[in-house]
Length: 291
Image (tube, rainbow, N blue to C red; front, top):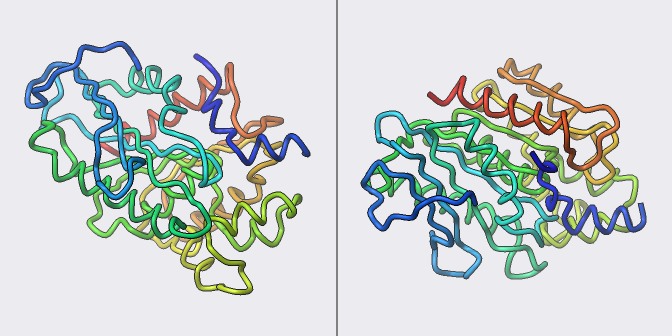
């Protein structure tokens, strides 16, 4: 196995540290049970970035093939679904009979595309997938979402704030920010992080506190949010581990089923034995809930 989400170390980690798939047969008939891989499916038409890759396992069926949705990172303004390509074969192998969808979304530009447009894209993509359940021959009554870094933030918002139909049953958070005001006001390298955060939020916490409140998943934790598993490296310079510490505490107080796994000395992503451990724990968590 290769480095966990090695390109998820994105614009933010590159800047900070400067200072601080699978080969499968394709099919045009997705109503069969053969393995299907299809890339760059448009789930909307506003932007060419609104695309996703689909992986359906051999023998997929509407009865037993549940759905996992992956969301890449990249400081909200970079990254691509292909960042996950190195990881997807291992994740699929461990998941077995699950459909995997790997999403792109519009990238923040400080103006016409902000967090609102990105959450709209995630919502639209999930709605599109659920609308295609019969055609794809999959089960969308129970969905797991997984996101890394900025993708973890977007996945948490989807699971905690926008899970209105209750389909999302498991949340996998890989070192995602969850309190945008804290990140803006308290990050150890504000000169780097504040412009990046303002670029996606369209404001500062002072000029638009409501945007920061509404854009922070930690503010939407209740007893009814989906079970969550959190992974974080203790030496992460991009998203300080205190972000996950506080989310863990909030989930515990709310009585939400959750797990919190930390890796001593690891940064914004890892490899080797810790990577294998992450894959195993994440997929076992999903399979224990989405079945």
